[in-house]
Length: 73
Length: 366
Image (cartoon, rainbow over all chains, first blue to last red; front, side, top):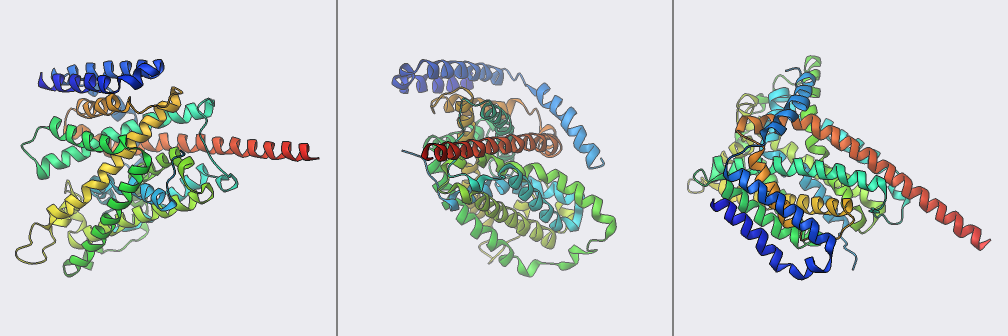
C-alpha cells in the first residue's frame, strides 16, 4: 500500500508543481494525464504483485529461441 | 537558445553506451562461448559498430546541419523504433543494476527502494537537459577511464598468461562468431546518439566522433575481459555472475586496503547514472517527436513507469538472465538494424533537399 501512496503522491505533486506549464498547453496536459494514469495503474499492479511476465516470456520465446539457434544451444 | 554539445562529449556519450551496463554481465556470457579466446571477439564487435555507424551516417559529412523534422513520416518511424529500443534497454539496465546492488552491496534493501533511488538520481540529471548530461558524463567517464586503466596495473603480478592457452586455432572460429553475436546488440546501443546529432557542434565530424567513442568504450571492455581471463581464468569467469566485480576484489594494494572494490564500484556508478539519464532524455525526446510536442513534464511519469515495469516484467533472476543475454542479442540487433536503415533514409532525404535548395538558389541567381 505504501508503494501506491508514494507513487500516486509523486504524480499528483508533479502535477501541482508544473500546473502553470500544464495549463498553458492542452496537448501536454493530456499527455501528462494519460501517462500518469498508466503509471498509477502500474503502481497497483506492483502492490498486488500482478506480474506482466507474459510479455517477457513472449519475447524470450521468439527472440531468445532465435539466439539459441544461432549460438548452437 | 540551441542546445550544443562538443565532439568530445558526443564521443564520451557513445563510449558510455557501449560499456556502462555491459561490463557487469556481458564478459561472462562472451567468455562462456569463446572461453580464453574472447579477447579476439572484441575486434569483431568493433567492426560491427564501424559498419553500423558507417551505414546509418552515410553522407552525413555533406550536410551543413542536421535536424529531425517531427512532421516527416520517416522521423515518426525513427521515433517509434527508438521508443521501443530505449524502453527495453532501460528496463534491462535497471534490472542489471538493481540485481548487482542487491547481491553485492545492499542485500537487505528491497528491490523497490533500490529502483526508486536509481530512477530518482537519473531523473534528476535527465531533467537538467542534454548539456548537463553530457558534462556530467564527461567528468564521470574520465574518472572511469582512469579506474579501468588502474585495474591491469594493480593486478600485473597476478597475470597468468597460461590462462590464454591454447591460443586460437581454426576449430574455435565458430565459437568466436557465436560469442560476438551475443555482444553485437550491446555494442550497437550507440545508435541512440543519432537522436542528438543535431546538437553536435559540427555535423561533419559526428561520424568520426562516434567511432572514436565506440573505440574507447570497446577498448576499455577489452582491457577488462583481458584482465579477467589473465587473472581469474576463463573457467572461473564463465561461472561467475559478476566477473568484473570478482576481478576488482582481487586487487589488494596493501594489507589494510583490502576493500578497494567499494571505492572502484563507487567510481563506476556515476557512469551508469549518466547512461540512464541519457536514455531517459532520449525516450522523452522520441516521445516528443512522436506526439509533436516539446515538454519535459511527461518525463516524470515515464521514468516511474519504467522503474515499475523493470520489476513487473521480470519475475525472477532466470528470466532477467534469459532476457539480457539471449533475447536481447536478437531483439536488440533487429531493432538497431531497422533504426540504422531509417536513419540512412533520413540523411538521404536531407541530402536531397539540400541539393534541391542549392539548385533553386543557382536558378534564382541566373
